[in-house]
Length: 79
Image 1 (cartoon, rainbow, N blue to C red):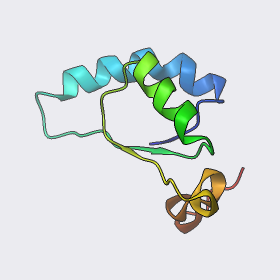
Image 2 (image 1 turned 90 degrees about the vertical axis):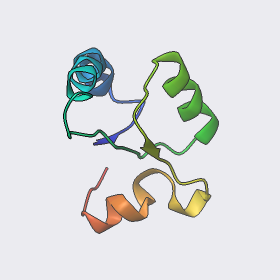
Image 3 (image 1 turned 60 degrees about the horizontal axis):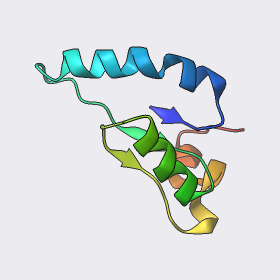
Image 4 (image 1 turned 30 degrees about the horizontal axis):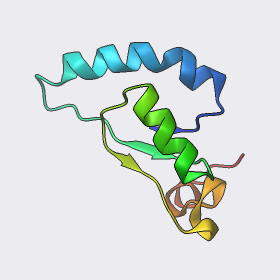
């Protein structure tokens, strides 16, 4: 899933996503986050505070952060 900590929708849906992930742990369904935020420190803090446990793809090179993420670009996402 693509997400940003600034999205009120993501924050609202996070509890439901975490419940789904716990239920899916007994299956072959896996979660993978692609964060399109630009501040790595802020994102890591957000992940820790919200206890997000699934793997995240977060680019540390400034030119590849935010909506310039190679993955977001590949899939044609725009801000």
